[in-house]
Image 1 (cartoon, rainbow, N blue to C red):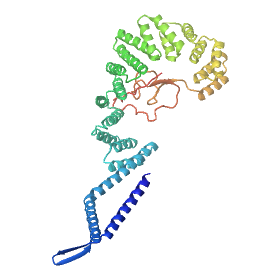
Image 2: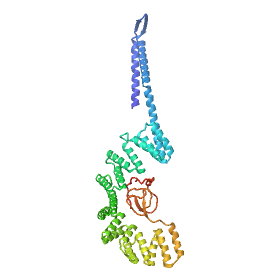
Image 3: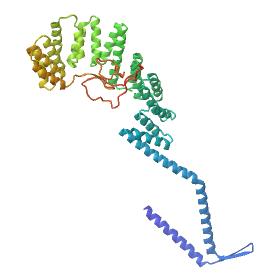
Length: 458
């Protein structure tokens, strides 16, 4: 439709020009001009054409003058647009290089992007990521600090600096930066978790609990997750109270922790030991028996054995066998029952419990080791025992505590990983792949603590 209108308009203009030309042809006239001794005579039509040409010439000259005056600015704008396109292309290529793990190309593209875009936020972010990929924390810190100068990127810069400070174990700086980030965005869940994790990693249990309660009140942390974290904090506070000899406070804190997370095995076992130490052994036993009925765990069995008092070998074996009988179909119960049957020289019962696991393809190295011991003790059959031990060497390993942040396997559970000091990152599982793609470094040699990560453990 628009094309038709343009054609119609052009046609009308041509008609108008033709009509004017015809009108002038019907009315020829003459005009004479005398000036400085010169006389010029011409027709009206020629004069009009000359006037139109003169206007066109002046218009062209004006256009040339305008272009000449605007030329430098137009060229500068074009050069700037070209540089921006080159910068954007360098950013894209740099991000691809980072994704591919090409540290050299990432650094090259970061330098190009930063120069082409006058250190735009995206270019600075690329520079920081490339520097970290190249193992250059100083360059990464420089890029993040440049982000602090822009209100739009200040929070992102603070987050990068927090991560760098945490990696080098500078928790004081990490905490100060986290509080600054919290002032910028009070409702950011990541900031609340970071502050909580740092306080917990430093053993500032009261402050960590206050931060966690505030985060829960403002719904910055999921309620179930928050309850779990608070239970772990209370276990830490209970351990600290027990270490300074305040058994009463330790017991109160452990009871609160167990109430918040009944399935948190360390909270259950600590409470049971404190109850037994406070002459409430039967209550402790009932609690451990209830826990075994829901989630059998070696730490529960160990606590149950420890609070049993002075018992003979057979009495202790019968006691532990009764615990296994509470949840007889569980693998841990069958293993515990087999161990106690061996202690009581009940060979048939031990073999039955272990062969159930073998036939169900639930046998682990511990299962085969117990079978080897059974063959030696019952029949003195060393050949058969060796066969079971060979199966044990290639069998599935036993579950144990593993830090999902660094992969360390401590002998027992603690609120913090003994290696990287991450908070609440110990899971009960069999050895396997670590979920973290790039785990944080181990604790620095100077004894400072890296900030804690927040997560669930078994």
